[in-house]
Length: 78
Image (cartoon, rainbow, N blue to C red; front, side, top):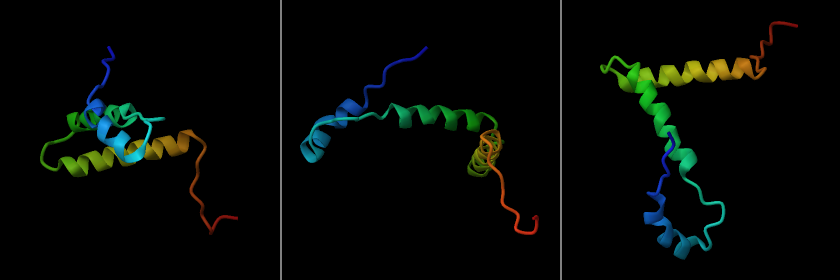
């Protein structure tokens, strides 16, 4: 289920006055990232949520790096 996000409309008039026409003005990408934070908090022990979230994101980034063909340069290997 996907529900539209309308919170950005509250700020839109001020941004239009300040920056001009609202071309390519989307906050859904950033607001949907809240879901990722919520999921990482589910796996937290609630004692150190920042540490747990950082570990989860670090692990996810490592997996993404490897899955997309990334590697770590080792200057000792020729």
